[in-house]
Each structure stands twice: as structure tokens, then as C-alpha cells.
Image (tube, rainbow, N blue to C red; front, side, top):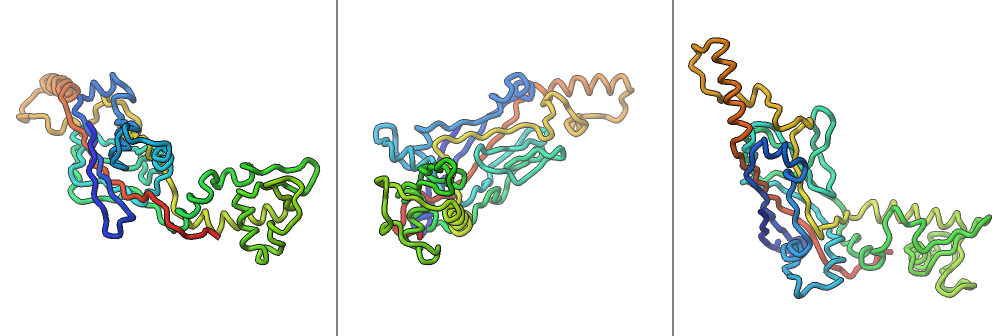
Amino acid sequence: MAHGSASFQADAVVEQRTIALGHTVSMAFLDLQGAKGRQFCVQEYTMRQIMLGKGAQSASTDDAGLLKRVHVSRIIMQPGTENQLPVDIGVQIAGFSGGEYGNQGEQWSYIMPSKFLVTTPTTIFQSNGDEKLMTSWERDFARWTSDNLETLLVMQLPESEVVLVHLDHPVARYLEKRAEEAGTMPLGVQPASTPNWRQISLILFNSSVAWIRENILSKSSQTFDMSTLRVTYDRVNSEKFSTLTAGCLKDMPLTGEESTDELNSKKEKYANIILQRPFSVNLKITFEFRIGVREQPVF
């Protein structure tokens, strides 16, 4: 199941959405179904309703673009999050780096011990950065990331120390606004052999890219694709759910007078009960995020 609730903080910029996910399953079922039995997926139509308050009838291409670049500042596990299983599980929210690890080094967004209930809000992800700066970058240069600054709308001339840069490129805008600081002339007053493109020395281009990475991209908040949501969980340390440890049997009723054979028989029967008994896994996840544009120049 999945549902969301909305609330707005006082500054009307940072918003909150709480999404509840959960099901009741047996451990035998989890092993039988594999990964599909341990994941929750919220599709784009539902995410649009949750994040933007819009349904398919009012959808637009702008909406799709907004949801693919959401500034998520914090993710919180809320009270009501519960693991009734008698084994530890790790929860992973797709697209977000995890901050908790199992003893084999596997990474999780959040590890829930066996028979565990969250009673106080717990932050499991936080992204610090200049949100105003990132909003301006998204408004003016949404196509560019740290990974494609040297390739998108950039052409390096063969056997030359010169590159062609489109006037829409962040480097072109940087050199137009901060030409003196960069030690060059504004591109707008330089002669152009090709419309909408300018020639820049490779050294100047590389130094400009480095400045943008250091002073803008590294200091701005990160964006995430929230057009869909996929949350998975698995047993910590990648053991099968049908592999029961001694801790799974600790609640087995005993009189203390059982013989070895009687004890083994009870263990076998109780283990089968544990594997077939339904347990609930419930997640109540709050996303703090921002969608929108503030008028503030990048350079």
C-alpha cells in the first residue's frame, strides 16, 4: 500500500510529503517471491499527485521535468515505521546514498533490527547546500551537470588547443559576466566565425569549468529524480529469510524438562511456524524538498 500526506513549512519554499508503504507477508513468501516481493514502487501518476497535487488530467511536460529535478534536503523515518520480522532488515531508497552498513559492507538507507518500532522521527538522509544557488542553476543551465560540462555543446577542434563553446553553455555565461576576473574579453565583443558559438582556448575553458565546479556545483544542493519512488528491503548480510538464526527461536515456549529429541522436535515445528506466520513491514517516510524557481543570477 502507499499513500501520502502534505504539509507546508512557514517559508512556503521547503515542503514536506509523508509516504506510507507497507505489507504483511511470511518469511517463506519473501524467499519465494525474491526481490519483487521486497519492494514498494510508487509510479509517476501517484508521485505527481503526492508531490505536486496533480493528476494525469492536469499533467504537463513541465511537471515531468520538475519531478526529475527535486531538491531533497532531508529524509525522515517517522514513528509508525515497524519491522515485525524476527530478523534484521536493511531498507534502501533508490537514488539516495545510504549511510548505514551491514557487517559485510553492504550499504543501506536505514537498518531496522528485528521486531523494531520507530518511536521518534529519525533523519536518514540530509543534503546540505545553497538551495538558492541551485535553483538559479536549474533555471539557467538545467541540462548541465558536473559530468557533462566538458561535452554538452562543446566541440574541441582536432589538433588544436581551442574549443568551440555554444553561447548557452555555462562557461560562455561565466566568461561574459566575469571576463576580467578570468583574464579575457567578454565573449559578446569577440569576433565570431560561427553564429552562437565562440572559440575559447582550451586552458581558459578548463579553468572556467574548474571554477564552476568549485564555486557553484559543489556548493549547491543536489537534485533527485522523484518522478517515481522505489523502496526495497532485504535481510541484512544477504542471508535468505528461510535461514533462521537462534534469535528467531528465542520466544519458543519451553518447560525446561524437554529431552534432546523433544527439544529438536519443538524447534523444527516452531521454525516452520515462524516461516509461515505473517509479519508486517511498515515504512512511514517523510521527504523534505523544494520545487520552484527563485530569481537570482548564478554568476
